[in-house]
Length: 428
Ligand SMILES: *Cc1c(COP(=O)(O)O)cnc(C)c1O
Image (tube, rainbow, N blue to C red; front, side, top):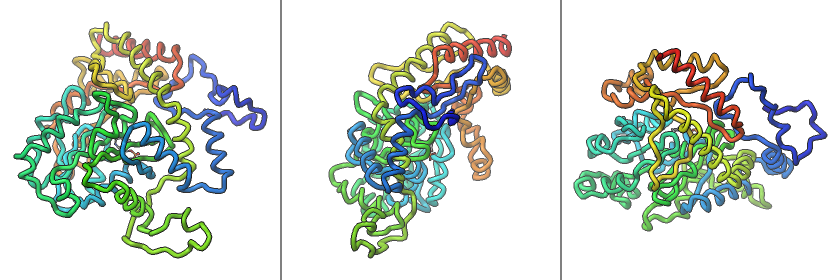
């Protein structure tokens, strides 16, 4: 919460006045963004600079992301959704194609595929909430163009195993390229929905370099937020020319104009061409300002999230009615985005009752996710929850708890106490 009662005499060293001091009785939010004086100063700096849309700060943020992830190149756009959809269009995905996605995800993962005219093929998940490898293999057909796993909660999928599958000769033999780009790759493309997993790694390789293409979200509730925003990073085989891909996608994000606003603003730069009928989904420098501050202190953010996560697990692992998230193998470094707590033996109604009690006690609590076949739009398209028994089982017993940078120890303690009381009452 921002306190604007005293706009002019703020001490920039005392960033805490921006957060209303929380009374113990106050409601604990779920995942508020970290907005302090540093973020505000950076945004104000952009506003005063005379350049507010895509410009130097967006380009600096792109470079900071490439440096942080070790990816070939990064393009920042207006959201995960627009970035992922832009890429699908550029890759030539359309009617007759299939894209394999998990059923346990946010609707955006499926919607972008539907917009492109292709069919989302939904597969069930494993106990780690991640797309199940065996089900993926069974879902591959001659029409499969992309597999899009989701790093649910910030836990990176096993991309190495997935590459083994798509590179196997029986799988590449089935692959039918429908344009030059797809033929150059010669196999199914792996595109990570990394909306939750910025900063995570697997075998010391950062998310952003684990799949052919990775898409991040910087939406307000994500670990690193620019209010709204997204980015796409690449690790394509050397046969692809990264600079041309960057330029083509950048042009596509600005109506297919041969010059962006910054180039047009230069002396004599008014004349441009439109090379393709493109889209409009660029990131603005105002949004990039938030991202630049956040990425500079992101390790601190991850460390804080991890400590909250571990305090939750320590408290809940001794409670027989609860199942803490799977332990993290040494090779895996998640981004601690969601704390997914399972209530053992609960059905959907009991889970809902536990949530209502937690909510009534002033603690925000959530469900990630309702499997897509439970939602009307996908039911109408013929997807059935009966085909996704593990997704349904996880959904019916899981709650996600508050986890955010500014969370205090006493807030964590209160969440623990409230959850334990609610579960004790509802499940005896
Ligand atoms: C938030 C989210 C998205 C969409 O991100 P936007 O930036 O809001 O478009 C996509 N996939 C998953 C799994 C998400 O949680």
